[in-house]
Length: 479
Ligand SMILES: *Cc1c(COP(=O)(O)O)cnc(C)c1O
Image 1 (tube, protein in one colour):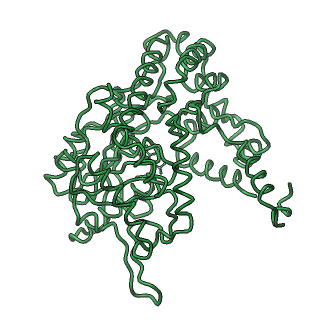
Image 2 (tube, protein in one colour; image 1 turned 90 degrees about the horizontal axis):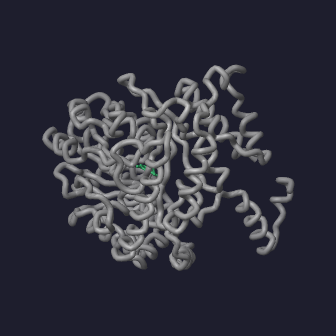
Image 3 (cartoon, rainbow, N blue to C red; image 1 turned 90 degrees about the vertical axis):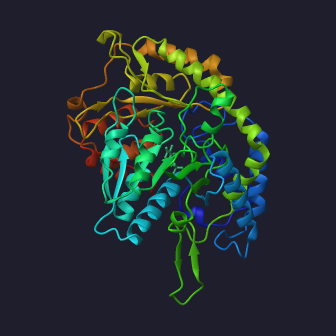
């Protein structure tokens, strides 16, 4: 199809036909074969509930809840559900478009409060190496300096004393995760939040990925967790993505604040222009109410019992996957992980010839029909090196596929045991690759070699790889 013909009107069947053809390029969103990005509940009726709710709210503009009170009512119900779940009976907040927006707004609110309280110069954000990239984005967008505390390589957790030591007078916010995305490790929330409170510094708990599953974890047969929610003194805000373990369509996250003053600092309001008064609780102006409606409808349908039942399946599947990986010679599960995320690293305790590289393993697992997510190695500020890993996000449908997944993990390790990744010299022998050529190769239907991409990120200076990947995506998505 030429791009010219896209401009001619076509009938509904043709439109939907074209859309289905586009969708055929996608990774499967259902069935549990992709162990990141998608959170499959395995209950088709929930997709139907979400679709009906989206259709009903399709024409509404979420910009103004006084004109469209259904938006305020749905949001209040979700905040109400969330604050009970996170043990903050008086917490207030909003539904945002996703985890990134929730994280951005948590930083924006803390920055504005810091300024309002007389902070001078540039405010600082304190995070760790495992803190989600969304906070790097927030620091950049909102003009904060950033201290990145290295994680302990063995546990995968940022040491609380190092985080606390960074809490100077210029700190507007400190961030801990429950759990971290890369390694599924719950940070030392109580120690950090308590120390922050003693210094009058807000502490954000990034529970984007854990917020809708950890609350049900222990009662669903999962391991005991340290407290990480609003019960902990000093926790001032929490982000919890409904579009992850809340099992709703993409476009919904919950951001809650313990304190109404900090919550109010999240707002943007302007009356000195010639149009309507603008009062935005989140980053967007006009916003769709469809994902809010879908989230509302799915959460109503599941209720706490529904979430507990889904979490039981996640716990069963996670236990099985962790046990299977630990039994594989040459691989190990990284860190003191808790909850539904698993990071798999090379087991350095065995002979070199018996080791399994997780990126080569990821590629071998992909040949067996399951998509794991490679994560590059990184040197931290203290010189320690966190190894590259394969990441698995376990969901309720994983349980149904265990009989297929576990043998695939084992067979893939047998295939690549003893093999090594190409050296940086080999990879960069011809200089830094051309992102346009990489993108054109991928667009031509060739499979993008993710092992090579991740190895390149490891081999290049981080600033160079970031530019390269941006240029790659610019080309990949261009007409
Ligand atoms: C997913 C995630 C985010 C970012 O959320 P998006 O919905 O992808 O924007 C932030 N923090 C953690 C811990 C996450 O897992």
